[in-house]
Amino acid sequence: QVQLVESGGGLVQAGGSLRLSCAGSGFTFSRYAMGWYRQAPGNERELVAAIPRGGSTTYADSVKGRFTISRDNAERTVYLQMNSLKPEDTAVYYCNARGPPPVGMNYWGKGTLVTVSS
Image (tube, rainbow, N blue to C red):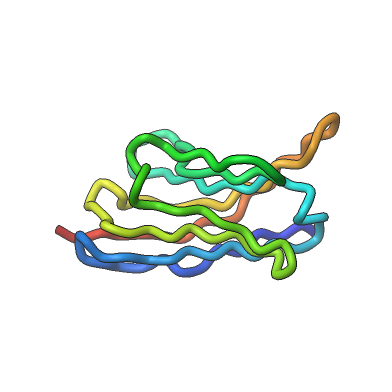
């Protein structure tokens, strides 16, 4: 059974930091590209950051220079370090795992809420 379990969300003041974690199980973690998405009320889900099996990371323009995605394949965990948080970063953050082609399975966690107060 595939599981992605996010943790680390919460309430923080603007300018503060949070570190999100996502633990994966039930699939070959090291073969999957991992990503963090977020969805604010009334908005569509959007990509925040992605880290492939190998190669360079990707960030949304709105978080470049403030957020850092990393992964530990031995621990089967992906992280999102969020610094200099802004109220507009408030959203539910979802972990995503995307498998290699040709099958390309796509898995989602249940999300963790990040609230940034002004």
